[in-house]
Image 1 (cartoon, rainbow, N blue to C red):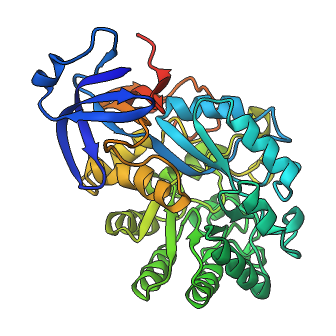
Image 2 (image 1 turned 180 degrees about the horizontal axis):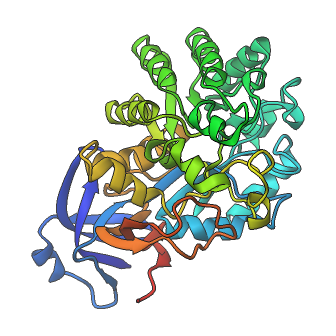
Length: 429
C-alpha cells in the first residue's frame, strides 16, 4: 500500500485545488482523505509513505503525440529511453506516432511496439498508419490494426493530399470509434520546411513554409469532419487562422480536437533566428499573433490537447545547415514547466485547467485509464512543486535537441507514479 500525505490535489475535472491525503491499494486510489491531520493518524504501519508537503498531486500527464523512433532510428531514441524521459516529465500515458521504419502499417510492427511498451512501467499505446507505407495512396487494414490494439490512426509527418482517401479514412475511423489525426502541411506551398515564410526565412535567404500550407488542408479536413462525424485531431497547430477555423467547426458541432505543442505557445520565429536548427520544426514557429491565438484557443478549450510532438534527433543531424537539418525538438522533460510558466503563471489557465489539457482531455479522447483523481481510478499520478526553479541541462532522452537548454523553468517533478508504482523519483540535489 502507498500513502501520500499532505499534498495539494489538482482536480482537473472540477477545476479546483484542495488539500488531501491519498491512500493507494492494488494500484488504485482507495481513499481520498480531505482532513490530512485526521488521515495521518490512520496510516497503517506497513504502508509506504510519501510526504507530499508543498507538492501538487495531479493525474499523470498524457501525451498523445510522441516519437520514440523505435523501430528504425534507435540512435535517436528507443521505447525504453523515451519512456524514462516521459516518466521524468510526469507522464504516465503515451500515444506514439507511426512514422517509424518500418512504419506501423502492419500488425507485426504494431505488436512489436506495444510489447516493448509493456516493459517500461508506464502506459504506452501507439497509433497505426492511415496509408500503406505512408505513401498516401492506399489505406491500411484499419480494422485489423484496431483489433491488434491501435489507439488511433495518423500519417503524422506527411500530409494526406487525396480528399477522397481522407474521407474514406475518416469514415472507417468513425466506424471503429478511433480518433484520426492529421499533419496539415501541403508541400505544394513549401519551399523549405521547418522555417516560417517571413522574417525567419528572409534571415536565412530561403523560401520557407507559409501559413497557407497549413490553413488550406485544415479547412478541407474540418469540412470532411463535419460531413463524416469522425473524431478528428488537427495536430500541432501553428497558425491563427487554424484556431479560427477550429473554433467555427466546434461551434457547428463537429467532433474535432485541436492540439498545441509547448513550443508553439512559447516561441515565435525569432527563436529560429536565435537558435538555428534547434528551433526548426514542422510546422514552423510563426509570429507573435499566432502564438497569442494558440494561447487564446487553449484558454477557450478550442484547443483541448497539449502534446509535445517529442521528436528526438542526433546532435550531428541538427548541426547540419538549416535547409538540411531535420525538423523537430524533444519536449517530454520540459512540457509541464513550459505550461506552468506560459499559461499558469501568466494567468491564462488555472493549474487544474492546465492538467485538464495535459491529462484529462487526452485520456478521454484515447480511452486511456488515467486523467482523473477519484476513488477507484488507477493511481497514475505526478507529484510536483510548481514554483521551484530548475535549469534545463541534462536529459534522460538519448537526444538533446531542445531550444530550451540553459533556461531556468518553474515546475520540478518529484514523483511519477503509474498504477500505484513509483516509476520516477527525483534524486536529491
